[in-house]
Image 1 (cartoon, rainbow, N blue to C red):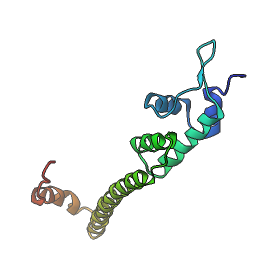
Image 2 (cartoon, rainbow, N blue to C red):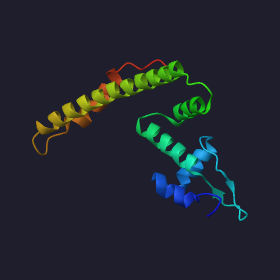
Image 3 (cartoon, helix red, strand yellow):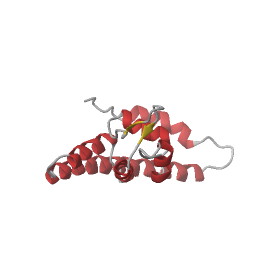
Length: 144
């Protein structure tokens, strides 16, 4: 295609399905280079590089909102490294909180497995018996 790359060609280049590319467009992360006379989207190599940036940022754990912010910085005249740093610190805090919760879940699951391993076949399962009791004892979190 003389005007640029088709969505299928871009899809193969970046390893993302066309539906994902269309979703990025819908979310304002990417705009096609234009449309052909047949109304097909076309893209340029800059779009491929932008999609690679988006995919790499997602693989780094950034949300689409984070990526949109980074792209707006990238597309701007200045490079606001302090704002990028703040965004990354915020995201890191969120990831660390998730990891703390997952470590707790892992600990609980391991204790459940130990409890199951200590039971003879045919006896009542202590996990099933105690889950309801544990839920009643746990204080409720205050809603924000």
